[in-house]
Amino acid sequence: MASEGNGMSDERIGTALIKQVIEEELKDVPSEDVPPLTPLAVQLKTEQEEKVVNQLGIMIRIVGDKVKDDKEFQDAIDGMACGPGSKWDRFKKVTDKVFEHGITWENIAVLFYVAGKLALKMVEAHLPQSVRDVLMWTVDFFRNNLLGWIRDHGGWINSFSDLAVASVQHVSSFSSQSYGLIIIFISGLALGSFITWRFSK
Image 1 (spheres, helix red, strand yellow):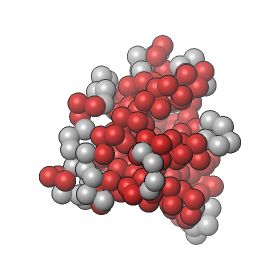
Image 2 (tube, rainbow, N blue to C red):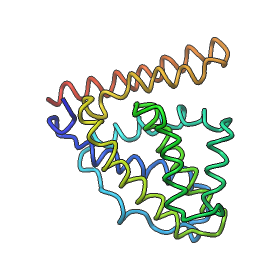
Image 3 (cartoon, helix red, strand yellow):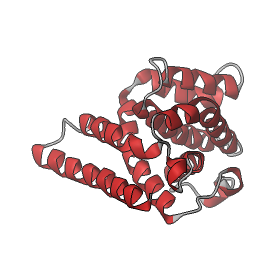
């Protein structure tokens, strides 16, 4: 069952999550270089939705870090600012790359993470207005191509276990102590959200 039946909106959570990931990536950029993003994203309506977004944001940053070493992804991100063709066409190539093996929770997390990197690249290329484009393209892609899948798979609340596994796999090269701490941390996030969700039904 999707989150809508429990007072949460998968669409609101998704759009707010995209906005949060982009804002997190731009947090060190002077505010005058970044256009306001608030009017372009749906606002969360409950404290529970805010908690889910914040916890997912942490997990997305861990999962998304794995593309840092992927040359194809980095070339696609770098090409957004100055590559051939329209920016939309280049953005579409990025989404095709992310989902070339189908939709998974991990791939959705990677797309949101890459959107943040694309937004930062636009600012670095002195194209700050394109940050809005990246946000809107990502939100539109989410609504048109991912939201139905998310609802069919139980809503965002069901993403925690898969993203936790992906996060742990990504950090498996850490020391055993750090590895254990991360497992405990991520498991706590997932359990906390699940308990909150269950008792709100």
